Image (cartoon, rainbow, N blue to C red):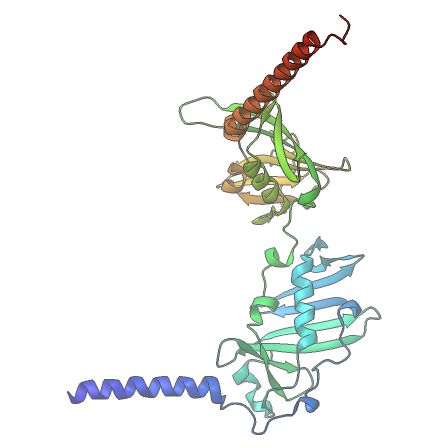
Length: 359
């Protein structure tokens, strides 16, 4: 009985300790600031001023992101296009850093909070090469939904909202722009699928399908025009269009040529044609270790994508033809013909019974 009580007391003590750490934040400096005393950690920082970001990660790995025209490049990775969403999120979060929660003024605590070389060092410069932010991202706060941050040259450590390592500590795959094909999916006019599908126990079969979008009332529908005209399963075609509009790579290939990856003369391609006539093609090469080599037609950058992503695009005529729409269309046509024949018959009878109508 005493043992059970001891266990219960121990559990209660642990729970109370966790609550104190989360709510009371014992590491926080005494005293609280009023709203008017809270300042931005980097008041001179704005999204449109940033020209370069240098990130020193742990283990030793440095990424340099540079503004290039309207976009960003990973300068440390042969100027590969950077993911603009990831870069903008990093800048916006840095702009939001403030002095609301001061947790330490003691320089000896920097190692404890990992806001030194143990953490992630970030340097941001503007268009005139002036450094406008230099700081260290440390370890998680006590609630794991916050992070310790220290500006370079200051002993003050502040607690900032959010798990910031997910924003500042990324692999090269995450910093790079992994989008293979990009287009506005609402402006698509036609879709062409050309692929070879392998079926167990059978020879590979080559398929080529083309389908066009059309308006039926206020609804967009899709119709197959190749290999033959047939109503298409619009929801399935829209799924393919959406998949291509958000098609992203799983890795990058930097040490092989187009010929070595089967992309010099691709055997598979998936082409979107927009309403203004512009086309976007995803070319597919050979497969290796469960991944396909792919590229977009307007670029020589070679990507790697998991096999299932290509398999999901390989839809045959039988997969896409809509028998229900075909039957409904034929019934509607029969009804129209019947009504037309009936109108002609009524008109004929009316003319025969009316003496004023000359024969």
